[in-house]
Image 1: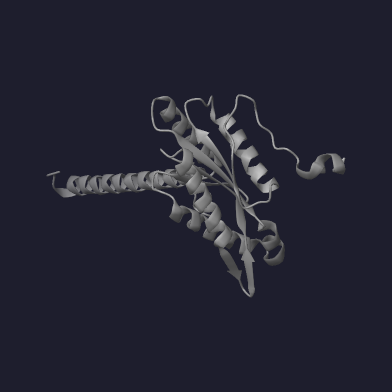
Image 2: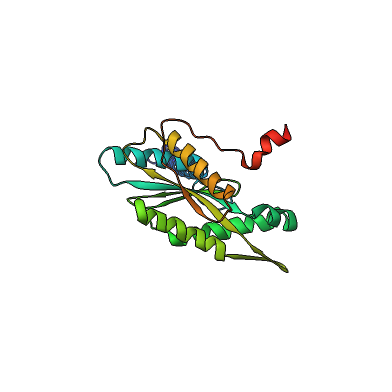
Length: 224
């Protein structure tokens, strides 16, 4: 450090080079950490709405079930399928429906608590995990979500669209074996709500047997 003459210039050059290498290393490490965080966020969230995606929903559902089995408060899962969504898609195209889904996501999120989980499961399907909320309280939340969707009006250019929501509700309690039974029960209840007239809530308790959607109006046999 204290050398003079040519050796001093050489030492100074090496010190400057070492400083630049250290700065470049820190910059590269920061960029790597930022990119890693972005990838982790993308893996957990839906790109269109910013909500959690199906993978993260199922992870959180697994966690909720484990907490209940460990003695925590019971919860509930809601499975939502929007009604009359396809006519809007056919009339206005994908851009309009993308905006509709974003607005619906914000609408639902505003009704929920911070501890609840709202996710887009795919297409026009959403899932909600209600933490420490069961029985009549969970039913009331589901009814409120249903009413919000029914009252919502989506405006696109010169057109106004009314939608609705068919909701399947299933408890998360210590009697449930695994999340597969919750997903199956919620899916079956949601389909029953849609097949019974839409824009309503149907409940179904998770069972040991895998529930399957029943083909409405005998369409499967009629198509065959």
